[in-house]
Length: 78
Picture (cartoon, rainbow, N blue to C red):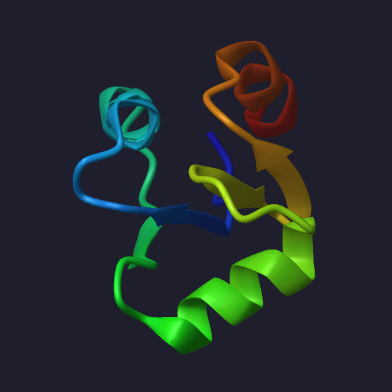
């Protein structure tokens, strides 16, 4: 599997964020976890990329996905 740049904007208590992180871990893919809880700069970056205030926001190779969408993840990583 090729290398992908994956960033997950999340909070520690978000169940869909946890599901997304577990999905990528199970696939053996590395990702950057960006905790937006209490991090104003990370929140601004997430909103600028997605237009959304809710998490998770997932960036796979500059493709923005809102929420836990394994069907879209599969398409982008394969």
